[in-house]
Length: 376
Ligand code: SF4
Image 1 (cartoon, protein in one colour):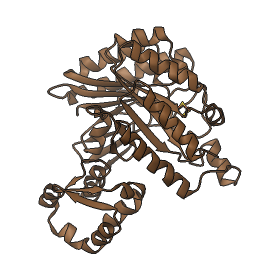
Image 2 (tube, rainbow, N blue to C red):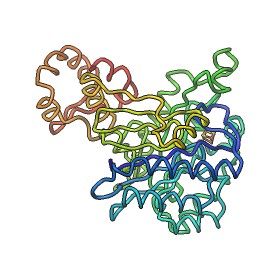
Image 3 (tube, helix red, strand yellow):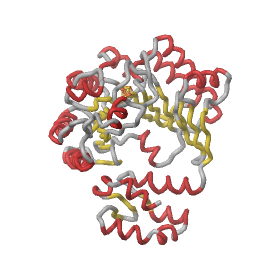
């Protein structure tokens, strides 16, 4: 286990589209939570990897609401319990309005070497409608300051498919993104669950969302535009300059073991046990304080479930699925049985086969759910 995820479930206010496990907090609650995270980490110290952690990812929520001193404390605890590899990727998700130049300057000294900015859009009317607390100019300033202070590996997250968003507005956000000193851009299609305000409004028919075709046009535009501007796609939603794919997220797609700490965080052990932590703070606290693992769910994946994940996770990436090694493991009849579906997918231009790797085409990326479900 060389990949560590740490969930920081705090936000200043809830965004209108968000259903993540996150909420308001006081400084005391944040302080307590950091102690719980350290205690939870100590429960796994027997899992210490021989050569130390390769990546740490602070996600949320808004991890940048933690004072730098608390991030330092957490890193020191993780180093003590798990050890650090000589070259690590340590990512912190940052909301543009939550960081000052002083904060970023202090953060630079902690070992955090990758920042992921929750920008979402460079149009202020969209940001306002989403309930975000920053304006486009805040995001530009924060990213430039981070780069100026020596953060070289910067990601920005963008969302398309926003209510009433046009293709032209999406293009402007992409243009702005590539003009900034960033190495990585993630583009997510808006997904609404009925737990979010927008999800409820959409269910009542009170939100005008782009059609499926308009969404597909936006996704296609991102693929074409970002590729032409030095950010080739390496995963369905992720684009990076050469040498800058996110090492942490790539571990998920390559199905490496990982440990998740904090509320609602999930872990994968030995490639077959998936655990998900409690999402309720009271229950999480009780378990950690009692010295027990704060799992709400622990499931042993069946052989079929593992095979499905080993099939569809690599297919999400530009590297694709190594047919020879998959067939060695699961027998060549797996693909023989799927021959009919595969021929249809090839003929429809959704799949391609290059150098022994099965890959989604650009069109296949747009229809990835359909392709993956017909292969399973
Ligand atoms: S900042 Fe992120 S995690 Fe927090 S409410 Fe907004 S979308 Fe959700």
